[in-house]
Length: 124
Image 1: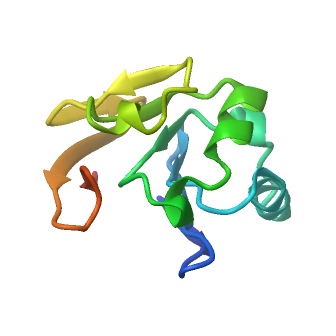
Image 2 (image 1 turned 135 degrees about the horizontal axis):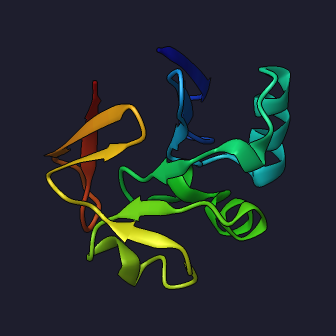
């Protein structure tokens, strides 16, 4: 498994994770342009991303989501509470406690944060 933190901090949080068969992002707090450029630096075409998992809806975690998700039509994994802040999404999946994306098994954990809802992910 390959993990690359594209950005971390108050200006934006975006993490890229790749397995043999799957490419995902956890959060997309940077501009869509920034994320596209960073992915291309890794040799990854943004349209090849299989899913975006959102931890919470603060702008430093979703800043580029609207444009990126619309442009590349990538499914976004969120909670029912999160959709209230992300009502522009057309391609989304509500999180379950555990689920698979290709060869990645994802366990969702509730986290404590000053957001309406927040989640963490254990990826196996």
